[in-house]
Length: 455
Image 1 (cartoon, rainbow, N blue to C red):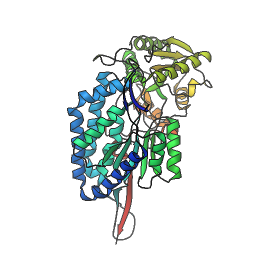
Image 2 (image 1 turned 90 degrees about the horizontal axis):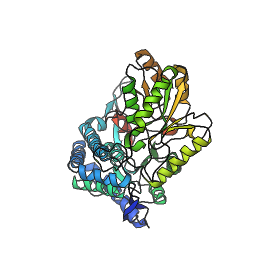
Image 3 (image 1 turned 180 degrees about the vertical axis):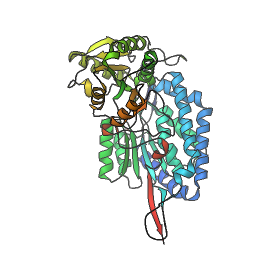
Image 4 (image 1 turned 30 degrees about the horizontal axis):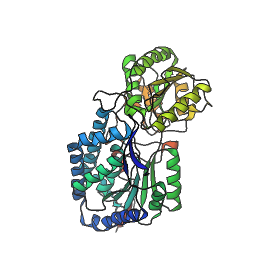
């Protein structure tokens, strides 16, 4: 039985299997990516690579319905959100194609002293391995492949085993967009084969989006072989409410952000930290709005919440909630799964030192905390090993700037949620990762920033 298979989480039916790669398949994939890097990149200008990436974006838009249907079946994403993900992926490809001159151009070095000139030139490194997760099958690939193909790197892509159909569809998009053989190669590799790919001297770097455990293992292999590694890992993002002139809108923002992608977003708010004079009304309204959303068939056009990505994911989340209750937490709403469907669940009374206090809850479960003031809110927000995103709601502009500066995270969103954009860098600190994706920073992750000094 292959690890690469589609099991519809809404029905728990195993509907398709794909054979895993043989060791010979893996070697052919590496050779193809290396050959394309050596033949294709030297003969193309950035404008040529940008044209290819624009074509990739266009095909995403033309095939959006079919592409969306694949991920609804693979991991249970509500269909409207799946369509939005395909559109966002297309926007990302277009962004890097539109800015090809900037991501590949020379940067003059001023005030270095002496006569002559100096520039920093961006050169591609070579074949790269991308290890991508199941929660955003198109978006995650776009933010890795888009800038790197424009820069001139070639891509080996190991997708999540539960997403073999969307993985194949992305490779088909690149092929049909005109990518020469080896520019983008999908490989149904095992974890052991992925380690061998990283170790291969022809492969120059690896990017992983996934769990801490996977990140640590990939980083260890990359470190042994002195390869550049980029990691985007988990998060337990705080949603801090210090003041508001529209509590209903603030609650709605929190609900929307927590339920996005069935609650399975690394940068979703998971810890709601509310100042004491707003705590009771916030908890009451948040619980009412949150728990009113019913898990349903993700193929419905108006579905807000589908199943978790798998039965195993739902069982894992249930175990976390049960353990939290054993250790003193209170379930205010929800708390009991039905197959892979998990209802919106609110936990209070989660204390430092308990298991769930330091864990990531990957599903529609929200922990709500009461704090005395700004200092207590910041202390609680930072009392985590994670540092991906964060959300701050306040009517005080000076407080917003002050608190944003104090939060230990890679991103702070003030008075808004779900505001990612192709031009905005994405990434974290601490156990949430080591790199940045999206924006212009992403284009510098896998390049040789070569100094050229002339007399």
